[in-house]
Length: 491
View (cartoon, rainbow, N blue to C red):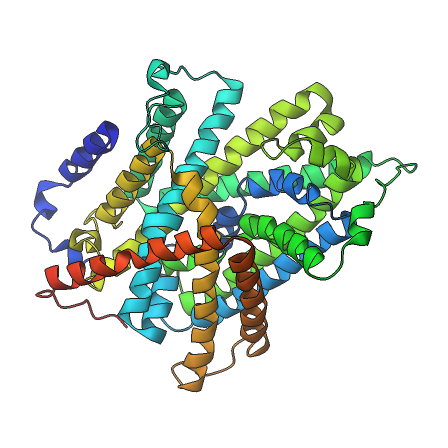
């Protein structure tokens, strides 16, 4: 366990007042304090990370022209909207926390739901926290140099692939950031969401500035970059493969629309407010993404964007055109703000999923406890923090996040199937917006996307499936270990 994580765990345990230590924390409910506006900003804040600022570069490198790249953003956005309608429909199933885990549990039972939760904990969730935290620290390092105290050991490797001492200063700063934000979330969901409201509003304003500044800066005599002749010679499979590759980049930027459902247990009137929040949040993000990328491509020709290299940030070049030498500073601050806000939301939402898993006896049982004063799942926050810190030290978070898209969309497809199943079995009654068109279209389009990913990236897809399957023995371990504890009955 990283030293900072251990010290923080002890402090969190010792901070419980003496007169509340005898309370059964597993029976304490979460507090419903989040309104509709906060829920919308949770959805948007979780989705707006770094992808919107840099994914245009690998998309430009595909050889597709402006029209097809913009269509890739729109197509990925429409698929995400279909998925949002599906999740919004499932949100009417329950008022309990857990999001996708809880919906899968209701529709398919404990085992499938557990595999989703395991994938989130081991790969998607903790890997995303580590990756976003590292990017935040890198953006800080670009403005204020962070010392690298262990650089002399940076070449030491474990299994020829894990370099725990590489970028030690940035890693230490990342761990400190994760610990501080975990502490903030531990102290109460209201404090965390107020911070998110402020940061997400600032992120949206920053993107609007890039959109408006880019469109205003476009000269009437602007010459669009010549259409790549390579694209005109492409036919059939090769073009489809490139287009889906561009959509994969867009999906990384759109991902996260499911996560806000994990805090259902803390949202006021969730069966009404959560569906509205998911659809509205995704709609806002889609409009912002399409417009800002249109602005990017109008200001900088695609061949220049492609030449930046995948590790470069396209938005920095656009900001330089708009603001001159101050542009890099503006983008660095915006990315710092964006990643910091996203990191805060990830720590918040994933802990609620682990909390719900523990209530169903398929995770560490202490994760089901709620702090008697702050009314937060404090042990679930600690488990998330510890594993994320370990991944930061190992440096494997990028590998995990790269293979997570296939796993995530496979479960999203199951969720859409679950909505249809719930309607047919009368588990869900009443009118569901977008049903049945939204889940059917989402299923068809994601299956095509998954098939293409399986064909073009078989090793990556197989690794993702393998990491999910590794969780099966742990399922029986948790079930046997917690067999004497009856799952908590929730309405």
